[in-house]
Image (cartoon, rainbow over all chains, first blue to last red):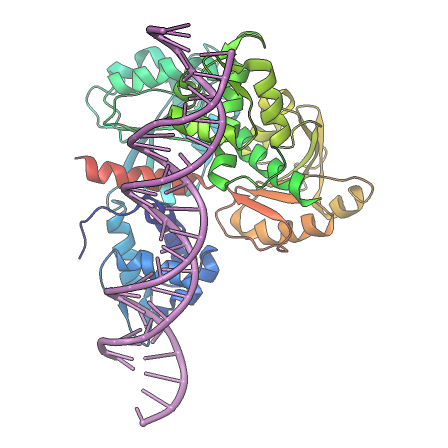
Amino acid sequence: MSGGRLPPSTVARLPRYLRFLEGLPGNTGVVSSDEIAEGSGVTAVQVRKDLSFLGTIGTRGVGYEVGALRGVIIRALGLEGPLQVVIVGSGNLGSALANYRGFEARGFMVHGLYDADPERIGTEINGTVVRHVDGMVDDLAERTIDIGIVATPREAAQSVADLLVRAGVRSILNFAPVVISAPAEMTVRQVDLATELQILSYHLARTR
Amino acid sequence: MSGGRLPPSTVARLPRYLRFLEGLPGNTGVVSSDEIAEGSGVTAVQVRKDLSFLGTIGTRGVGYEVGALRGVIIRALGLEGPLQVVIVGSGNLGSALANYRGFEARGFMVHGLYDADPERIGTEINGTVVRHVDGMVDDLAERTIDIGIVATPREAAQSVADLLVRAGVRSILNFAPVVISAPAEMTVRQVDLATELQILSYHLARTR
DNA sequence: TAGATTGTTAATCGATTAACAATC
DNA sequence: TAGATTGTTAATCGATTAACAATC
């Protein structure tokens, strides 16, 4: 019963289940929804409900076969093949991302690293040479890039996003603290550090 | 009508409104819910609904006074005073965080930077000397740290979190790709890069 | 008064939880 | 058969949206 559209909240939790499964020793054996729940920080009912959207993949009285479940989640998230990524911005954050070991491990290939600062052009980060963002659209003319990561200062974010769109990049993960606009068919997600800290602040203020 | 508990979804959006307001030139004049909505990537109705939880702070037919609105949101989020932060992990991500200019700008003070790697102890990042995590609990005995940021490899995350708890740190922002457990009264939030990319992957898979 | 825009109430929608049947 | 555990249906809860009254 695969193929339907999943609720957004389910989509957001599937990667957590996958992360838990990949932390297990080996790829065999069986896990229960209770164990997945514990390792993912959600409830067991939630796990079963989410997984039921992916089909009937467990065995009653027994649990879920680890390898099969991994496969089902990977397919549901469209993670079968490698996804091509470019990173724009080679400052601290961009470098951290380019060095992030979790990328290859999870099937993301960093295909290019761009910046506008002349001092950084030509330097190499984790085996990838930093190129000038002005050449990006040409560079990527022949390739299909799945995800463009914006790790620039706020002021540059929108123009970089525009370039990514022109380069045919299909989705954007934006770390700059500003809302960027893009054509409706593109998926744009935003991660904002200050927002996270401010949400913590709210809870702190209520706790004491 | 302040002081009540806000819906979590509202709490998550208030920082975005604040970010938009802080991007405006000057701290005076009036903004409409439409403008806030546009600048924050939500709907105007949503903005008005959220702000109505903070009291009657707009003027019908006119809009919201920028300075006053900022103040109300800052108070609602508990951002009046500076919040004390420590960062554990001085690798790429930890360094990026320590160098993040948005911290001071938004009232977060990086009070310490810790690592377990002897090679990094004593080095200085953005004016803060990296100290050994083994000394953290003692270091912080006299201080109240509001937020501990975990920027370590997955394997170290839980033990670092335990140390933060022992050091009396009040909340945790975890960047390691693992669920960490902490006493119920602590607020723990998690930011996971791979999860974000995998959510994008899902949407990519449905788009073509 | 007319136009603009907030704030509130009610309706809708979606997500979570509870209850329990199915079945290993 | 008894125990374990999934999967589904129904109930509850919370969030979003629609409609509109209030008022500058």
